[in-house]
Image 1 (cartoon, helix red, strand yellow):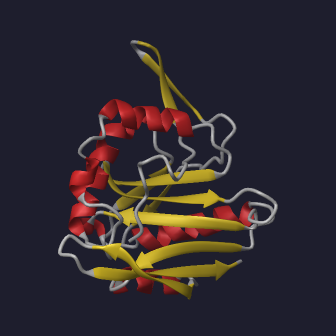
Image 2: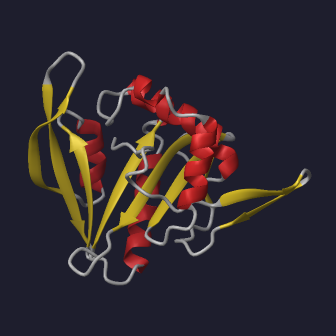
Length: 215
């Protein structure tokens, strides 16, 4: 699956929890794309929750991205590349992105644990404001339960509600047939390829494919 970056290059709109005093916390969005939390049933009968992340999720989100990047060779970074990230940096990242008006991040919880996350980023500027890009990551133990499909449905609906958005875009690494199957199921089609876009630890290269869904 496509990785949700944590190097500041892709923005997110995030619900942020500010500590008002030692016994109270408040959550707010500011001027952002708002996602109202929802629950849905997984294929195995368990209940899943989708909501915007909170600053209190920072530690588990860090653990999540390290684990997911080690479960597949198709994300953009290896686990050790996140070693320098601290909890305070992740919290700061959440605070900085909470005011964004052109992005939305959604986290999926199952049994109180983070199972996956996704995001949509809206392009800006006269020439590119009709475009949006999406990304998704799911822990392996939660594959094939319907989480990916439901998160994509929410991202697509978010894009449809945004004035002027005509297409949604994403990328995947060569060989990731499971992700490609999900993307095609959701209506995405391949539009191009970047040869040798990713280099693995063993020195081999893989192409990156671009996909698009017209709304």
